[in-house]
Length: 535
Image (cartoon, rainbow, N blue to C red):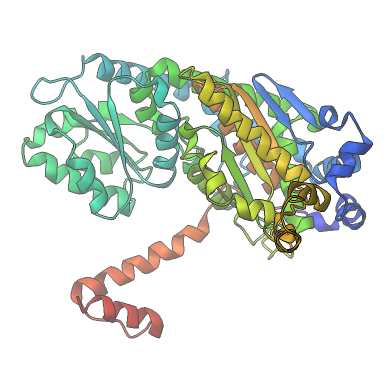
């Protein structure tokens, strides 16, 4: 079935939510907790190794009931089934959206075959069976890609670096020549494997970097050695062949897997090499568990559905524009950049499923950083600023290196921050705190030390950071994105907004190379080009 094309603001539930919002918008969560001693229990979900407490949000049971009613009117359940049944819900590109099939227990035959190929290849690289052109085993693996061909694998490899093997893993993405130059300084061409990831094998940044690296490699090696040191993940077999990469070192990409959701595919080859195939499989298994939860759980007990509906509640009724994600582990430092692409490239849309411009807000801006560093950077704004910013706190029960003192302090910060955002600090509490100061000093300090509280947050508590649980966490956010897109009546799986800059880039390069400024462009761009060419 096609996703329904229906303006959500015309639904009965949306109109009821608007009335409800006027009743609840100034309510204090502190009062909610005083009035209902079971509030935390009621607004929590346990699923596998995940415990999600969303009780510190500006909601009542009526809010959740109406949001679920909205999801039903927007046919979310039917949309979920359409996605899992590989129907072509990416309407603008006439494609299915089937990244979940990559980790399904009932994988397509071509996916099973490709996983076996990844398994065999990664094992040979790790064990040293596969060697470079001088007979030496590989010591370094370099992933060359951009966007989803970089952000996902890079985030996963860093997040799971505790489980890494002996191979050094590097990622080259930026067209800035300093990026590959700095990486190449660390490498020995005799012992380095390069994975070039580009579905079209024409991506400007990726192919420019790949050709630069190829030239560097051929300074010390013969052309024939490319077949031993370069691997491709692509759908363009002719382009791969022209580059010099052998067919047996080429891994497929399918048009039903979007780039920003592709780490579960051949794009994850660098993950399999860095962690070993068994850990890559555990990552897939964790995602598959979350897929089943998303598909089968009642909406009120469904983690991705609740998170997606809460996002709609804040974005469209409280008119918040951003959401913060704060993982309390340094290993997840690259989670936010990964989510920025996944969320904003998916739902940063202004045209609905009928081809009309929307008259309501869609995609949220996602930002954040790892805790507790973030507390010393921007938490002042979260606590006492004028903007309302919902926050996801992500924490783990068990430390990986078993330094319990450190982990206790880290998680105490996790719990303390969510509590502080909720309760704030009243004028009376401040007065007690500063009562021994001179009266004039009390008067001066008092207004600055009051915290209003009533700031929303959701706590996501996971047993331990491991491949399986990371897979579940990433799938959770993937499905949250899906829920938002269905409710907002947009197509979440295209990205036409990325294309215009690429087109104009092709017109500007000749101007820079020839040092001749085109006349048929805006005066600001012409002025900037002239200033740049003065160098």
